[in-house]
Image (cartoon, rainbow over all chains, first blue to last red):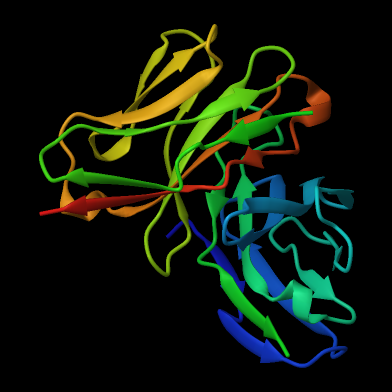
Length: 114
Length: 116
């Protein structure tokens, strides 16, 4: 089944403890992206990747890192999480980086930072 | 810069009545517009998109949307709402230039509540 998977789905952690949220897609998509969803703010883009080894900042990149060493994986790294990073995170992918392509979303990761 | 506005936090409609969810956008040039739906505890699902051509776009689950360039709007519609349409709906826009291809701008979302 074609899908975007994220792990973990739920995570409670403490301030300052490094964590990684994994994202993987099995559709051979070039483009991948990370979003965070907060009530009243919709989805805001954190980072995106147009292809392997190509990443760029979205609207809210502060406090996050990403890497794209292989096509299928796009992990999100929080080096020193803080409570304001408590949010619902979504990974998405699309066939290409072309503007008309539809993005397909993972199921989400709910992160709580205490 | 591109932006999207969904002016209604919530839309309430009775089952069987028409449903409209409003979206207006701001972008330089011709926009690429998308609607997504989020059911409780689920990821976003694609409903439909406007790229070019016919202003009326038909999508999944009986939804359609009308692109209006003069009003910079892309309202989502369904002729007869179902209780199962209750969900959070997001409008999104991307600009036509290659500089903006990587960036998809979402609205704040509109909660749709369909009552039996």
